Amino acid sequence: MRTPVIAGNWKLFKTIGESVALVNELKQLVANIHDVEIVVAPVFTALSRVSDAVEGSNVRLAAQDCYWEEEGAFTGEVAPKLLKDAGCSHVIIGHSERRQFFGETDLTVNKKARAAIAAGLTAIVCVGEMLTDRESGQTFSVIETQIQGSLAGLAADDFTHVIIAYEPVWAIGTGKTASDAQAQEVHLFIRQLIARLFNQEVADAVRILYGGSVKPENVKGLMSQPDIDGALVGGASLKADSFAAIAAFNV
Ligand code: 13P
Image: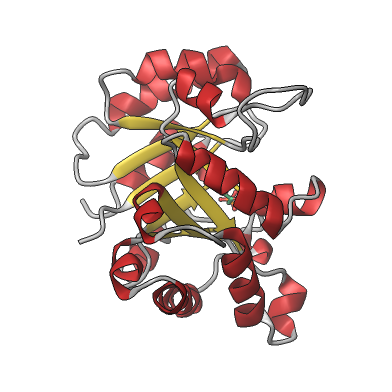
């Protein structure tokens, strides 16, 4: 059995005060949800304060990115061990916005994922096709390249610290969710690919989240698909009530 994961990616939103207020409201609303891993990913500057706020609750903390070196002359970067130090258990890596706007490649995603895992963080590794890929029938080949490159060199044991997020770029922030069947099709493809690249046990255990306009209204349908193990939520994670409603998908 795979424990579902509902993760909120707050992107570049909210001050420290707003982040703490949001998570304080959220932790009350989700206090009785025990069979779901609930994760929030605030901006870097809010991590430490949000970490204090979630202590003793069932809400876990993620960063939205990391670097692959532990320390050194790398101005502006943040190392995985510093994220742990700030209270993170998870880190999002290779989000499509980083791939699109900040030059993230499968190679850098791979370096970051390995460094995060080595530091004891759980890497939420994101993949997803662009609209042009889908329209030209390239979805599976794009996803295969991203998965192969992003997870290259990982050992089967590393997968206890890996979560995969499938986020079709055309569904992010657009209000256009992939249909349950469209999402399931890609999730199944990813799971079969993981079985081929690693082994069946790893494929059966790895959580694969869907992301892209997930809302309280569509989460149940998505979560009823056999290979969808959770959601990576953007816009709807910025309000405690909508994110809590998503986390309560099976109530
Ligand atoms: P939206 O839920 O706003 O579409 O964002 C999805 C996303 O990018 C989560 O990482």
